Length: 516
Image 1 (tube, rainbow, N blue to C red):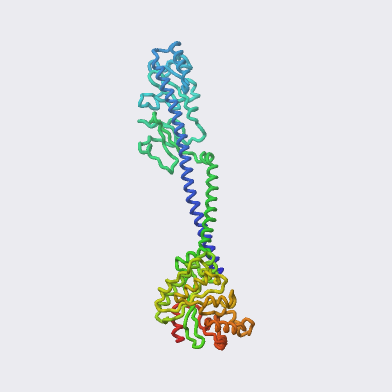
Image 2: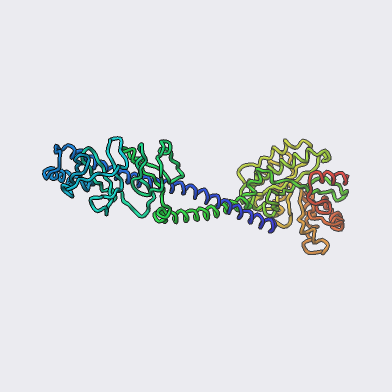
């Protein structure tokens, strides 16, 4: 492939790798975000339940304390009564003060003792379904209103509850504790989150992608908590996880980029393209005619392979060595023979008896198996003379190779030694192979006009061929002077650009008609 298309494909591969890395980073970020969101939401729900449970513990302690004092048999304030109330207060964890009512007015308390003037309560904030009366964050008048507290009254007694220390007030007021009975009432936290009662549907609705939610106590189910997390608190709490998420995203993007780019480069590599080319018909056939030098008539052709896919062309000097290295010479040979035979036999202008020459790999003759080319005979419906060309190579001098060659000759195939004179050759091998053609390498022909030492060897090659009764085909004939000299040397056939470059089957048929 030329450098320009190669650079274009590398640029395209880089762009695809960047796109994949972005998509991968987005997907991984989204998945990690879901995991982190689930984790954060679980933490926030635990925090909400912890607040509700603490509230429940206080209410439970207050309820138990009020039940115990209401079991007392005293009907008025006295020192004995105060002593009994203080004993019960001592056993309580979250009740700070207990008071007793005489005629609906507070007459005494465990802290202040017996009041000189009974205290009348203000209107309560709400009454529960258990008839408990609540005052939330109400000023404690008996303490000069310098303190506020939550007061609950049951029967003839009330209790001042220690809510602040248990709920855990912080600077992040991102929750609101409220009573959601017949009357909505804010109890603690940020009173701006909710200002009205909440319906059943709102209590049950819960979106996975939202950190805003409402939880109610399991026992005191009208006491609920609205949570709207403070983003600054969450960021401070989870900044380490966010940094880790960012690093994982960067690593994912980098890894997917490298992986994708390497995959695309491998996909577009010579090895991968050639492997895929056999199954996707990227290989195709062209045909170079060879002629009878005496008459100038096209009497045959050499089948040559070419390659082109969506990435461009690969030249034979590149893909042939790769085919050998991949060990797919048999598959390649079969593919080329099948394609060429189908094209040539279907063309009406290619005559019967036409010589069709195929290039074979010497290594295929040096295997334990015999090269199976019977399918070519089946496809040969026009009685073509099928010539198998083998480049001179020491691999074809083995006993196994000679045996396979003789087997194929017995089936009607002809044999030619390609590029004769520049490879591994000797007279003994030529006699043993009993080949039908010798193809004089183009380097001899191209130097004929210069009368070089190499070109002076052609007469000796002609003598060898005549002695072995082997026909000669000269390759690389490019002008009439070369053709004339070859004829004078009694070389029978020629092949080269003078008679036609590698061409399609339609162009070959036109060459056949013009030479007739």
